[in-house]
Length: 363
Ligand code: AOF
Ligand code: ZN
Image 1 (cartoon, protein in one colour):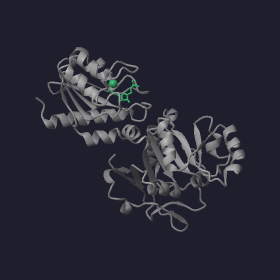
Image 2 (tube, protein in one colour; image 1 turned 180 degrees about the horizontal axis):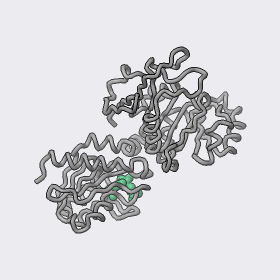
Image 3 (spheres, helix red, strand yellow; image 1 turned 60 degrees about the vertical axis):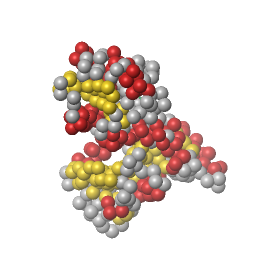
Image 4 (cartoon, protein in one colour; image 1 turned 90 degrees about the horizontal axis):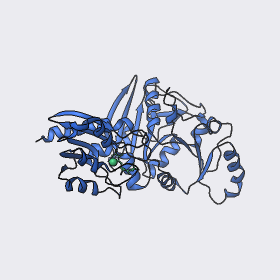
């Protein structure tokens, strides 16, 4: 009989394994599965890139006969539906797994509760809710889209020692160093979408792609909040629209409507998509329906404030740098001291001279 401490230790490993493919499994969650026999890991696997095969199938394949009598630690309730692959719950039974330990129940209506039922009907001992909170954090993007019908939103900010995020009229200002920048590019690769406001798009002329060699193909879809379609066609974003998808989000008031037709046509003929949304909430529901699970909001102050005020930020990554901006600085919309109590600090990482504070709120 495994102790609670042992169950938590192997589940922590399953969660760690699951993170490998977060953001690379399309609309499917990236799940981790660890098979343990006599206190020893016999196989561990994650949902494959693209979303299939599922984690349990991959782990069972690796373990083969060794799965008989083993305990499976799975971060999400094993599936019970006949999708593009046979159900994982049936596969666990077929391989003779004796016990299944799960962190998070699957909200997918085809699976919810049924996964456990299939296992129990096969005589497998089932234990749920082990490291549930940690499991929910790892699956936050999937769970948010399934439950709230919108992507999970990460707000990333880089703040100078004097509380600034840029300098007026100066374009892109380096606040954090190379290590933090690399971490941000890695984060971009794990997201489905990245968004900036039109102010930042014009002032910084960013590309918003992933510039880590070998990972370029994981560049997220780029979104610009551009109420009146002011994004210039000579911007880097528009010029690269045929290589990495670009969506320009208009939120026109009725007075703007007739003036926008020409702008829409210019952007569309440059390869960008123009999307109309009533407000940020509406935009997020549209993105959820399109299957985007993780959206990174990268600036600037206006867009950040709009998401914060609408209560639509789920995670805040606050990079603090020792750089001083001085006069002409653009003040950060949020400092560590003003982060509401609904968020808790879940991590703190050092990147060269910079530090990143990771705040999350529960689902
Ligand atoms: C698992 N293990 O590794 C994953 C699961 O389109 P399909 O057939 O692949 O099914 C997608 C659903 O499967 C998804 O909504 C979620 O309920 C479950 N994902 N389940 O047992 C896994 N990725
Ligand atoms: Zn499955």
